[in-house]
Length: 86
Length: 464
Image 1: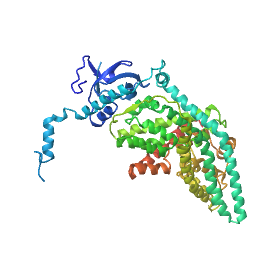
Image 2: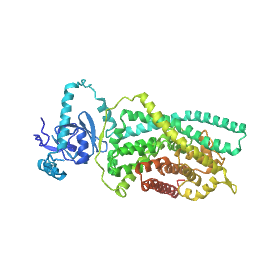
Image 3: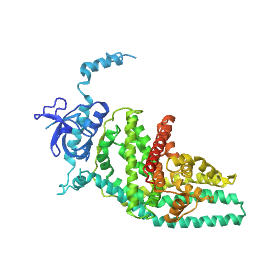
Image 4: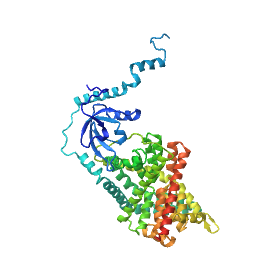
């Protein structure tokens, strides 16, 4: 079982927004508060979930990610609150 | 009651919690959610079997075009232009047929009045005022709406609107507003009142108010016929020409620019703050369900908006008829008001009658042009001008219109205060007299400034 509270990913941790397009990664932790945290959890963004960066908006922001079969777009300041193991 | 537990109140319980879970470090919520998802994954793994993925991922291919750096914005513009082109071209013929039918009924109603020996004012007020304005609104509005709303619903049903939000989001972020505002803005194209109600999807009160206060800057269906007619005037009566579509698309883009600019201004001054978190789902594209689209766009939207328009057009038509038919000193009240407003109208590149038409059109934007025609003709009732050539003759030859008059009237129509229904909706949603008043005043001031600047600049530069 995945330990949700002290993730011990072997790779290095980066912010979700910095994940290069086309690369998959695994969620390490979510550093948002209250409502935002809640919303991300509702999307299924729990530690251990696989995410893939899909595409960028023509204007450079937001970025879209594949999360549990759905395509979800985040603005930079929100995606920066999610740490991932590369 | 005998105490079973060693705790004597909430304080003690909280102390105990703090001891077991120091400053919430255990993150119980997270743990619960994670385990729910783990459980769901396990069940889904056991009972759900997935078909082998098709070789070509169409969703991805379509998104590669519709949200790409190169084609994202051009494809958006093209879709917008196609929808307007279909609306403008397709609405012409049914509009004429409807008008012919409704005006035939008007003649029969007049016959009936004569038959019953009713006094002249009864025929005037009820038939030439109330009935005629309703007939006009139906003939002018129904065909474009019956084409525009289904087109728009197809795009909505296919899942294209979230892609628009995805493409435009950075601009809204720069303006300090919520990403969902691009969705409520799109709803405004149908009807601003519907757009205001849609603002409920924005949770943060600050961002919701910004979205409500700026919804009016996208032209609604009541204003499109006016804009299309004026654009046709500018390209000299070629209704179906691509020139009209280009001008109307230009006006729409200007409206979006105004939305962003005013949103930015509001979030820097009256409604300061930073945008709250925003996640946007880009759902898979779906094949539009035609039956559902027709039912939803015709019954939920077209007939709803039309019904509302008729309800306000009827009394407004009566009042307009009274103003045009009550004379004092040889001129009708409408003409008195028109000449009184004329100096101000001229400053804004228009004339007094146009301003009067906008004032009387406050209940519903779609009756602005009919009222204007009525006051120009001074015929006492809203007259039907079946072709754009006749309209051009009336405006250009008899009342000295230039391209600037048409341009300023289009700008004023785009930017001026929302109609009474929209204002009422803003009040109902915000429960605040202050914000309702501001949502009328801000656009009005902007409309005056823009029209004044355009008119004066064009005159100074000798373009007119």
